[in-house]
Image (cartoon, rainbow, N blue to C red):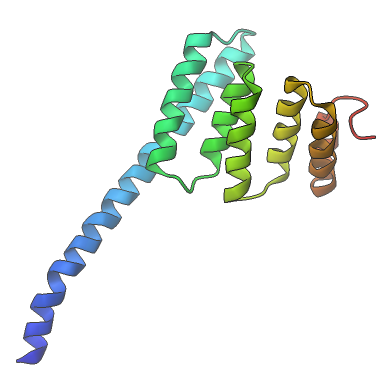
Length: 150
């Protein structure tokens, strides 16, 4: 008798947990699809040599939504930081790259952080981040602007 009672008490909790987990999974899928679409659009316009401001702004808005849907996905703030770099908004890019570093430190984030500091005009902070990126991943040395690893 007690086992039946425990089953009926636990069943609604299990169903609620399953529903929440399914919703979370759907949010992650939506965030991933948004990220993929934004990256594809960005690669396409950059390859053409132009990146219209309204497209970059729309991409940033979409990525902010993706960040809300999947706050643990490090690729989202990295992509958002890149959008801000393309918009020539280094402060916003730095904020996003720092957010990405809190989620998962990666060498390419330090490289992009260096780019953002360089765009901001802070060569010393740029140099420190470029050096760290190159130390963590020597293959990134080729992407560092000349004279900024010394």
